[in-house]
Length: 139
Length: 422
Image (cartoon, rainbow over all chains, first blue to last red; front, side):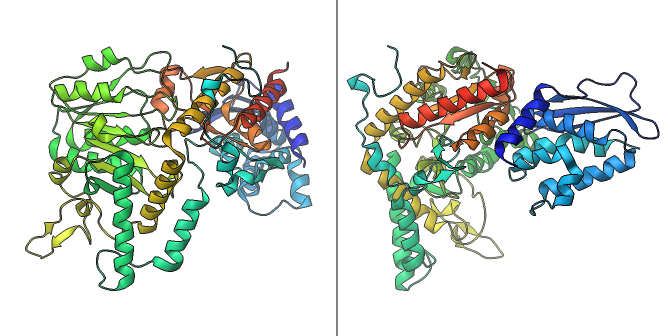
């Protein structure tokens, strides 16, 4: 992925984020923060048999907002357990030293857009934040 | 007067420095990052190293290394001489009265902790106050907070004004009979503000209060004269001074240092060890337990020699020009706000562009090969004062150029357009 496309996806999601704002009828809620970076995320979910809706509030960078937006799109329609499994895979992908194979890229679809930041640990922390909140959701 | 792009500054502002020639001493400056020439504007975090330092380190490790202060053999004596000569170079660099007043530490942080732990541990009691300022680095906050926990002392914080300057009258009001120590940064790493150290030290001394000066950010930028300042302690870091990492200096007045208990125990710092009692050596060895960073000390001396070879005046002139030029050019960017507008500043510019997170600015600048620092710069309480969690910071050294500042401003303008539109 070229930096230009990465920037485009990042900017698109940070300017027009999907799912921004907390759900009034949430069944689950969790928070995560990176105090060092001043980043914070509150995540709300409405879960039936699967995740029906995702709403979030984020304080921090465009990378963080884009990550929230992308994650919400990605986990909707999955069960909570499935979504949390994906979160663990995503973490391994972001912090891994190996380049993603085609299957992983496909698997993470839009989320892979943020692979451009995989080699910048501080940005990995930003990107991971909503996923950490997702992992903190108690099922 | 308004400065325009290019070399249009008045003659008096012209640097006396051949920047292109100096840049050749720093191999890293010829690197490309992300396909662009590196523009290194993160000097307040750590400065780059000239060949003279790298080659000195290399020669020491290749040909001169042995442990010091113990061997009777040639190499050990040679290394001991080089290490002690480095101490003499440091003493001359900061104009200490004697080399033994200069203790080698791992850096400024360890130097400050040494004073807190040794002097503070022995001399401070519950209810005693340590007066610092709102613009301190965490390294000049946390050691005192540890003493709050262990000794029940009280940390008192003097406020700064909107421009990032210490409010001296307020600071003075906070000096009380309970104040047992005054500590502050000579120059702020986050704002660039140069504190009026000499005047503050005089006021503290009039009340019999000793002063610890954090010189991490001042020592790379202008001539330090600890006798003229009359500070009781002065701390600096080698890596910010174009020297190696892992080496720094605590200067202290000899009588004061000799009255302080050891900081760490081990070899080199003792006179005689017995299970019935151990006696300690005088300064500087008392505070240098174990094998010190010999190469670091020698490399630091090489860095100080290098700075002296260029001269403080040309360095100051060049940095003043860069600060002035960068400030003017950055003000062309609408909405950009500079934090730290003290009259007296080192070449550090912290700024915020509302609507764009500093980490995004930093990442995008990096894509253009430009290195800056983003975040809280280890001064979280300072940003609370301004209602921010952090800023983007560009910090300059004498090897930076106006051309680099042009690239930086151009990249910033592009980033602003990308995130916020025209």
